[in-house]
Image (cartoon, rainbow, N blue to C red; front, side, top):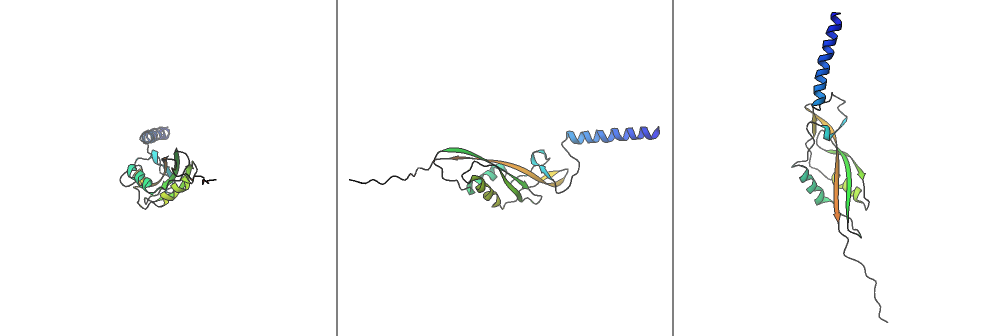
Length: 151
């Protein structure tokens, strides 16, 4: 009976500790190579200077395609911020076409600035990140005209 009582106390204490961890968003240790969702981390990955600086980098380096009609296009890319701050596993989740998805991948691969990696339970973790890129494109004003002939 004493063993049963001690076991019940131990289970109560451990369940109380675990429920506190869950309430605080702290998860149990996992495989160090697992990829965590960045929005669920205690410390989220961050570009040097913040997300606005990252958007400035993307804007400065993104080559917009020529389009016949004005449009707003949304590209969504996902990538992993590694423990050393580099980006890997860059993928296009939503591609509006016109080569914009490939261009977004090119720009992200060209990023040499290291991010501050995410942290969970005081340890650096690999973190997934979703990035929406919205482009407002104006139609090209240059139109080829048919040559005119005088008869």
